[in-house]
Image 1 (tube, rainbow, N blue to C red):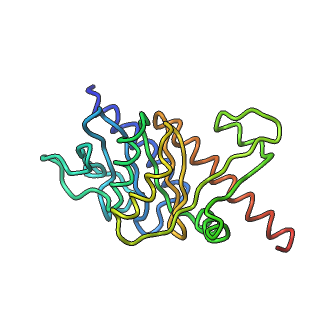
Image 2 (tube, one colour):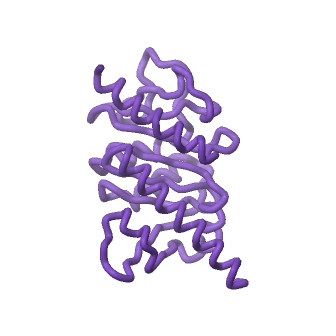
Image 3 (cartoon, one colour):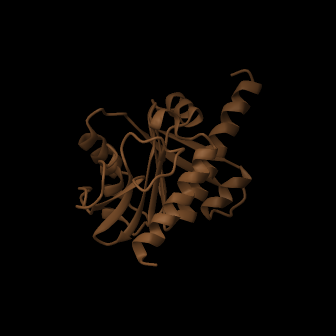
Length: 203
């Protein structure tokens, strides 16, 4: 099995798990995985990600342009993934729209970031200190995708990370599909926990 098929299978597994969680409402979200230094697979635009077909992903070059031989068109937000692979050695990038990440991005959008402290699941990010903290930047939801990608790219430097787009969704990346999915699950846990805590406290 060649490298592209292996990466296709890795990304399909992630898509399947996230679809079960219902994290792709209204065909939203996009996923990608690096094949080599010159190309990556990305979800096709406008498809129901709860279904599995031979046209779920397209191979694109390092600038996000579709490579001949693949049907459909790349996700509208492929340029966000271009930023990740162009600036880091990350191997997988995941972008989902959930109610929880949208609520968190709106609650803390004016501050430009949100910080979580003292939660055990922060260890998922490799932070093992007592009372550890993790901070996620929040950027405006520019309708112009190149402008959005430019702003997003300001927060992309490490091989693993995350950025919230206000009232839009979160993009998380890691060194491979397993790590990116682990980070995404951990952030979504923190978002859900925080919202429930605020409700219970009557805030």
